Length: 268
Image (cartoon, rainbow, N blue to C red; front, top):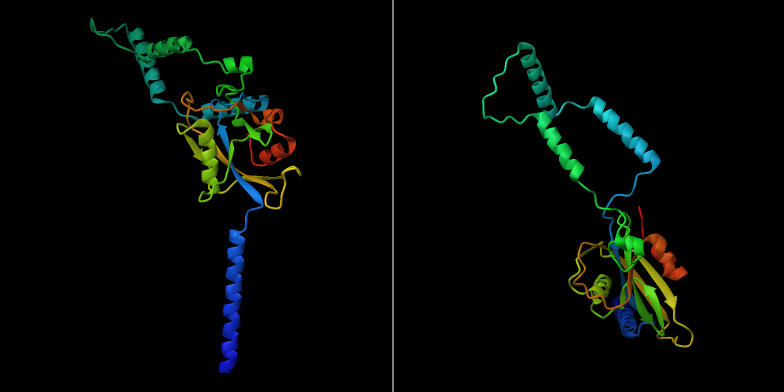
């Protein structure tokens, strides 16, 4: 029994040592796929989208229902009380106004508010950047999501991509994606990164001319962030860039790359 136990222990130790050796070899082996982190930076809508016909009809219906079931506000109650008081005074011919005393009534306030409203001028939904189709401007398509694309050199080609950089040892994929954003916009940018896990992955092989066993291709891990800075005047724009809607991505991205991005990019 003791001999069998000793043999069993020896086999276990050998198996563990072999497993550790395989792990060390795997860890020390060069990576055949280069890893990249990419940040899909979105500027959220600044104004609401125009209502559709059905939405306008529903809004009018709900407004009518709310009006019929609502109670009088304090201002409306005050206005009714003042109107009743003025009616009684007019009927009785009684006037107790004190000379030199100014009384501001609810109707006076409404007239004042009406004049203020007439002077108000809403900002146009169509900006100068919309009229000139300046896609480098952040102040366009105010009722839509905009995503940042940059022109980067990949091999001997310049391609439009989501900002991306190669992963470095010691980094998480999220920190790599954050570095990609900072590389283009600098440290002044304020953005809210959504989660620690990537939203998508794009995998491609290098051309055969440069492909080797240790350098097969690249895997790009996409993260998402919402832009919170309203002023990018201090941003370090180092390369060509555009802010585009989901419908405009096809003008810049290659079909396979676009297909991966569209899987996690919502435009509600």
